[in-house]
Image 1 (spheres, helix red, strand yellow):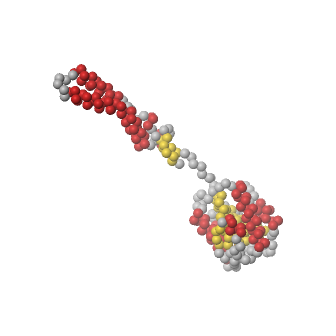
Image 2 (tube, rainbow, N blue to C red):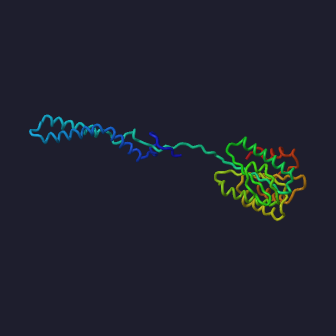
Image 3 (cartoon, rainbow, N blue to C red):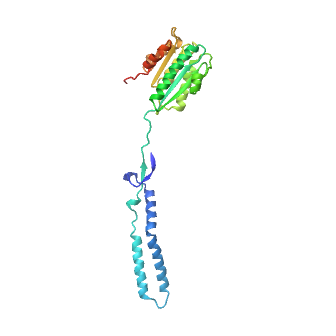
Amino acid sequence: MRAGFTSAGNPSNIDVVRSLKGALARRMALAAPYTRRLREAEEALQQLLTQTPVDEIRARELIEEIDRLRARAQAVPFIDTFDLRFVNRVKQPQPTTQAVMFCIMDVSGSMDRARKDLAKRFFTLLYLFLKRNYEKIEVVFIRHHTVAKEVDEQEFFYSRETGGTVVSSALNLMGDIVVDRYPLSSWNIYAAQASDGDNWHHDSPACKDILLKRIMPYVRYYAYIEITPDRHQSLWEAYEEVKDSHPHFAMRQIDGPADIYPVFRDLFKRRVS
């Protein structure tokens, strides 16, 4: 990054204008005593020549003094190595990777208190893991029922808002946020979604299409956790098609509190690329 000027550097980085300005200022400063005395000597000689008779000895002394002062003023070099100025550049550290984790939680009516508690425990574990192990990471919290909303940490874990289920609203919101705030050229994008899998029947195929077109081509990893002790719901069936075509899409099921840590560890264990 540009960081002013320096007196030493690569010749290709020399700033000609700044160097010439410095040389001019130096010449004016060093030659000033001689030019002042030269001007005084010239005025004295001019005054002496107007007198009759002319004092030739004094005139010759003034002419010699003028020549000497002019030579001293002209001896000041036009430019010196001291005047040279080079464009200074310094290295500004930038993180080689910037990462963002999207936490998407279903808070619809089908997610009863026990299932919401399991989802919150899972996301708490994930949040603590990220904050303790990574310095450069952002976390985006999204809650959804029929409508998705980006929230802060407090509202994500403690709000009691509920309603129907339209999972696609959360996926669309994630896609919009990625486009608006996280350019793919400088961000690694991850996502974790927790739901009981219950969704409007016609919305699950829409979720699959959104994942295939708007999300999976751009995320590094996507983890889906279905919180249900029963058989899988329509959302799981739609997501299986996504998993078949994208190896960085992972799906796990949680039945109870004892499953949270093993599932978390399995999803986010270190993998050899």
